[in-house]
Image (cartoon, rainbow, N blue to C red):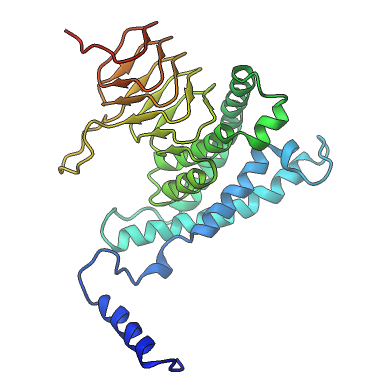
Length: 292
């Protein structure tokens, strides 16, 4: 490397030396890790498969439907198999997971693709929930192209399936990319039934063990979080709340705790702070009283 200035060379030497320490971010095996851009490229191939009539650059009909889907399915397969394989081998190398079968990455991708028809059904219900729940929506097309809720849930439903398969790293890459694009932060472990709508969406946070029933609607700034955020060794299996079917939560509300259940059909007002369960069809506004 050509020398620039003594000061610059000194800074370079100091940075190199800093990698001799025990810090966790000193990993020099980055070439073995999944490639973030390749993961997102794969997801960007899956989106047209789910919404082909919206994303296609040419006319699509039943005669050429299979060919058009294949143009995205096969490259998505190649990208995902390679990136899952890299994540798998890296985790095995550092001792975080036991060795997987040789064809595990390929089998995971095939199972993901077999789930795509069901994901399309779920996302269809999500899109309809947005259209029916937002009087400002002029069309289904507008919702698919421009609503953060739909973009975030498309990414989440893919990431969640990979999370269920035990794929390391990739689900969080997908979730983070969706967070950057939409302002919605959903952990890929969260379980979300169909017909889910996030109005505006910005600032919504949904934790790893949250469970959300059918037909739930959240407004901007809602947090479904944990009561404790410290890593204490044994992590409780359920740290985030459960929202039963038909719950509506208005902007800025915070609901915390794995034992907290918001009963079916309840309405939680804006800026409410809840750390305990409420029965079905409750209406909570302002500062709720603690249970006796």
